[in-house]
Image (cartoon, rainbow, N blue to C red; front, side, top):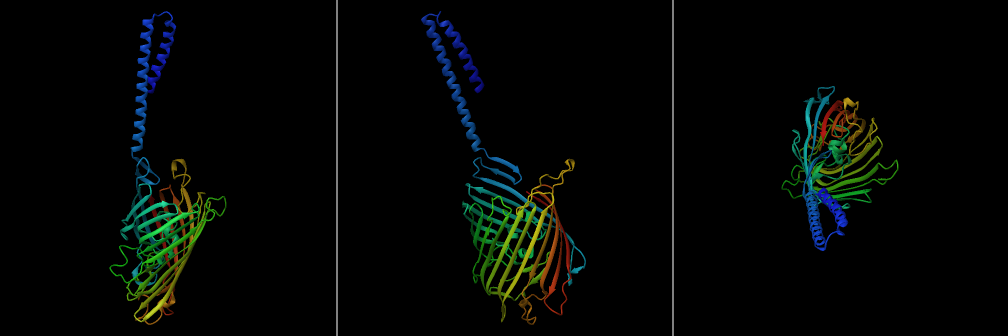
Length: 467
């Protein structure tokens, strides 16, 4: 259209020159006829130009209304042209193997064999999106055979960067390693702090946000309450209203964020929970070894009988290819078995360091290789080394007294565990990772006449796809 308009204009200019050169020789009638011809052509040009403008406006309007289909590093998405409405599909698949090395009995406990196995550790499609520009939602089921359930189902309203409201089922804002995505873990299994002591996912509502350009984040919420290391499958109360809810809070700061300083990657904070149990029978945590074997349980007759408090100081530090994460957790339970009432203190801690051999930048949220694995180009992706030490300590009072009143479960004889782990991680690209972790655990018996459980030695392997 623009081409035609230009050609007509050029023709009119040329015609005008010819007409001007002949006007001097033309009579009045001929001049009038030429003038009318020029006016008609000018009107036609204006009509054509207006049609061109209308066509451009319609094309722009149509572009604003046309949904955008995206396929990239954050999954698959369909969003409105203005970005206010978006639906995304993401996924995490982890195929693992566990190989126990040494004794054929479960770390010295007769009758329970150590079975080498292949398993699907996580099979999690995630459906998430945004409506009206500020209301986010997420739904994540897990189809892994050992733990098929709904992991996340929540709505998050982002009113301001410092004022957000989240409701549904999601991670309780306490454990640092727990808040790290399952696809970004540097070891195949999380530490005692995460798996044994601090809560996983629960149903509730929280206020959270970021202040001072992201240098300080906070979260505070009310939840149904879960056992140590546990998740809320449905609702903790199960029809019993004899307990209070659980309150959780966390403050975390990165004081040098965004600054040109070797401390830019430093972050630290404090988190905790508190709740009140009133002999409702709800106290059933199972503390597990790295190989996911039972380490400690309460006797089935033990009930919560008062306060349950958790506290967890935590920090991480990332600088270039180096990364460090550390946290401590202490849990205080008021429990009772009949007339035997006690306040028990359990605690655990971990410190883990990682180093990316290929020089990529380390971070809490994972690693992106500089060059994706490609044999034809001689690229080998990113390689990382990892090391961790962790401990779990059970209060001696859990094992005190005769068997008929003892708080620990009948098969629980271990009061402490010390584990160290070494790992090698290979990032073929941003989405595909191979992991190998070797973890060895030494146990301490609570009884002089019961020998320590045999050392657990387990080799983990993982093939992961996350998008």
